[in-house]
Length: 230
Image (cartoon, rainbow, N blue to C red):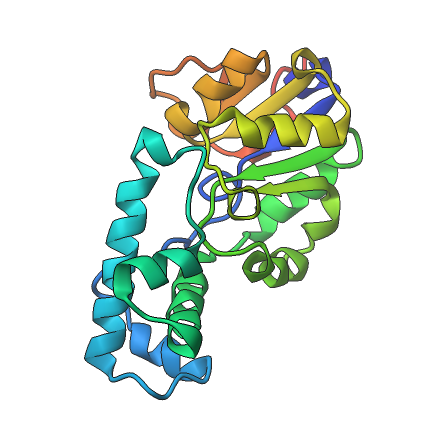
């Protein structure tokens, strides 16, 4: 029996777990090129760069603040609050941040999720800044949008893991007890510990050498297809 076959349903984190090349939000990124690509035209290059970096710095600060775990702002609200923009300019900067936050699902990861979906119901429980709509195209293009029976995006719920709200919303939607559920993620603090506190089984995706409270540690989700087989 594979390890995953002990569980009724599988719950997946996204960025760093099966989506990669995400969060391209460093100071070396060409935000202005993205701004022009989405149709922005009122702001200069240096303004776009400064506004994006200022909003991202503030979002990172909130992301690490326990007081914000259950009341995390949308990326548009953060841009308005921290950059002083409104209307179309605020939306343009929010769209630039979203475009640089979204990553890619490698073909091997898509195949893994598709295979697991033939044996288990899957749910997505993920921390993101951009609205859910920003992720739909890449998930659909990668062939994995349909494999998730429920998708819980933090940006739609207004909370971020380790808040239990995202986990509980997904559990309710999937109609499964936490003891019959397996959570797979790449963060000890955001995924493994809060999931275990709710009674999930847990898998940490990352280096085998990492110290973890997880029930299983694997280098990638591909290992779940055979882990534990005789």
